[in-house]
Image (cartoon, rainbow over all chains, first blue to last red; front, side):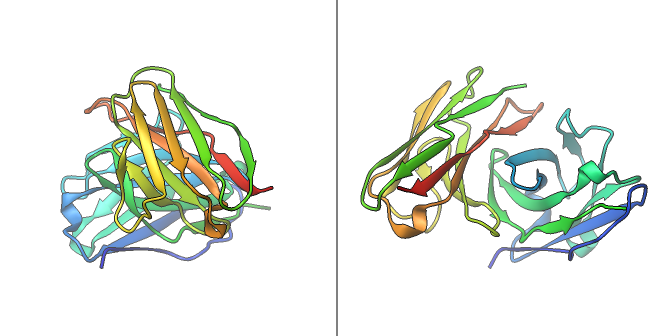
Length: 118
Length: 110
C-alpha cells in the first residue's frame, strides 16, 4: 500500500527555522517525484515545488522560489520542506504528494499544520 | 505561468442532481489536466487525470472531458458524500514542469 506519512504539527514563532518531512512507503521511492502543496486557512491549493528523490533535482513555483527549500534523503525514503526564517504569513497546512506521470498527484500525505505566531 | 480559472465558485445543488464544473486554462495544456476532491479536514483526493481518466476506486458517476483550454468535471447524480470542494490542476510542458491549481469550486447542498 502506497503511503506518505508527514511529520506532526509544529507551532513556531516568526524568525524561527523549520524542516518538515514526508516519508514514503509501499512503492519505489526514487521512481516518482514528490511535490509540496500549501493551503492557507480557508483558501485553495498552491503548488510549491517538486523533487526527484533519485537525484534531488528540484523545480519550484516562481511564487516560492527562494522562500523555501525542498530536499530529499533517498536512503530513508524521506522528502523535506524547510524554511530558514518563518513569517506569520507562512501559517498554513502543507501537504506532500506523489507525482504520477510527471503530471498529477495520485497519493497525498495527511498534511502538516504550521501555525506561526508571536 | 498558466492560470486556471474555475467556475462557478459555488454550486448549490440537491442530491440526485447533475453537477457540471468548469476549468479554463489561460493557454493550452493539452490534456495535462487533473481534478481533485477535498472535504473539510482531509487531504485532497485524485478523481480524474489526463483530462478524462478516472483514478483508481473513483465511482463512474464522476467523468472528465476537454482538451486544450476548456475542461469539464461532471458528477452525473450527486450523492451526499460528493458535497465538497473540487480543484483542477495542470502541468506545463516538461522540463519547465510548472504546475498550477485552479481556485476551486465548492459544491454545496441546496
